Image (cartoon, rainbow, N blue to C red; front, side, top):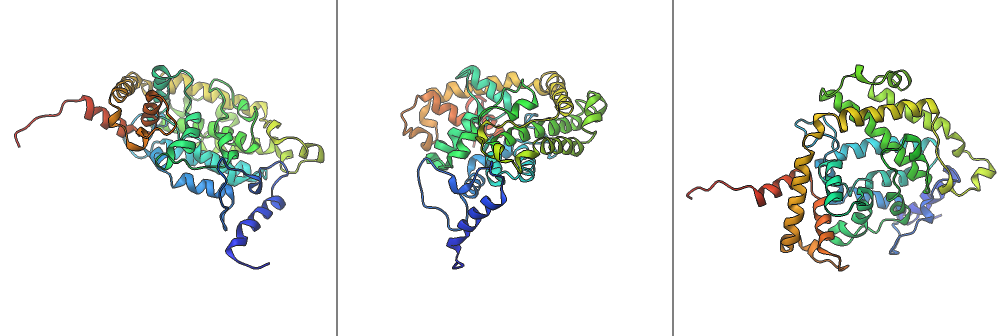
Length: 360
């Protein structure tokens, strides 16, 4: 075969069929909402990843809250560092189980692109103000479909788009993340998301002196380990071991629809993970000073929502364009949900906080 760049993608696609599990997604079979010419050197999922990394929505994650609103200092996680940490966890699991690591990485990187400023406090505010069914993962799909690239969208593959809208209620346990309908890669990402946040939020809460290591339920250090890295390693290793059959499936398993296959966790490890998750909700997310700023977040977002609904001329041009003829409220939610914490605060101050007057 002639060795030219135009053959690189084809080689990578062939290698996927030889290297990956029969249950893994294959880039050669990926489709897009709008067909386009293939890259000569990158598979479809690799192109998706690059489009996400180069998008403004992805860059803005560095100034969006993970748990602590506007933390002072550089050592606390933001929505971007959470995304990178969970992406690494997801890729490790996907690689071990011979799933499509590129697809897994894309979904991981894109999963929070629709997240609001101020974390779940901002999401709750928009549910209260605009739509009780508002979800950041559905907003992520809206971002990649319509809002990114100044309203042009990213035209990501349907395999990525479908994975973004599969979600699990936060009240359910870790094992529920491996269930439901969707690609195995999307279920790996959901598991990795929970693994990442219950561990790095524990780490941040200890650093903030909200809790101490000795406060953790006894079964957590006993089963998962005392350090952040030990707990992550225990969870990742257990998931790989419990689902090893997917890597080298027998003919019966290989013939199944991958979307119908559920990922499992050993009961002992799941119990420890769920206890840690419940502990965080009781002591950090709800029962600590991390919750104290939420009424202010609701007031700020409601004020911005009401203001921009009345002053649509101040929305960005790409938002005002409204090619789909959607209600003003929908456009305002798109604008607010895309804000970083600091931009939302600065916008509120510009509009509602009086400025000192002085003689020039």
